Image 1 (cartoon, rainbow, N blue to C red):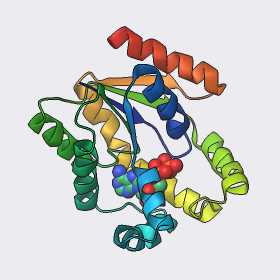
Image 2 (cartoon, rainbow, N blue to C red):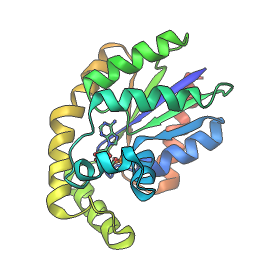
Image 3 (cartoon, helix red, strand yellow):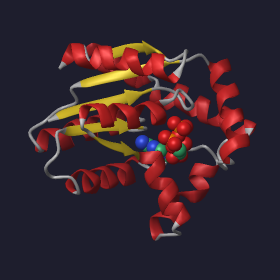
Image 4 (spheres, rainbow, N blue to C red):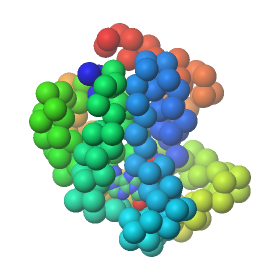
Length: 190
Ligand code: ADP
């Protein structure tokens, strides 16, 4: 089983690229952001619980995340592997993911990180706000999401670097160019 984490700041293009990577390498794409947005849309118990948190650009609790992750993995017993998009986002989530995969006889095989600077990110997210109207894409919330990323998520870079799993990829360019770079590093690994 192949476990790929697609890592990067908000607006780095993880979602777009994860879908394509999953399709090409026959993996199941798990986006925690998409899971939460669906729950919110369907007004489920979980959706109601996380809506405010997400609209403020804060992080949902680690406990909830690992619960969701475990049940999502269990929904796909016979697959070639997974692409994680938007997870892990804290050190605690990273070690929970290690434990979860270990229990299943696997591990995080590779972390591909899309590198995009803050200015480009803010521009992309503001543009997405005009097109998709996501409630967490206002300037104030975007700035908060970037601050949360810098304080809570960025430490994961060191965590995975130490294990030799961290592979940076230039996240600026056309969608096709970035996809080609990701494919190159994944194919090199496989
Ligand atoms: P982005 O476009 O900023 O990468 P996502 O679509 O991945 O955002 O997620 C949207 C929101 O859902 C996040 O800002 C956060 O509130 C919540 N969320 C998603 N994944 C996680 C996670 N792993 N841990 C905590 N909260 C999360």
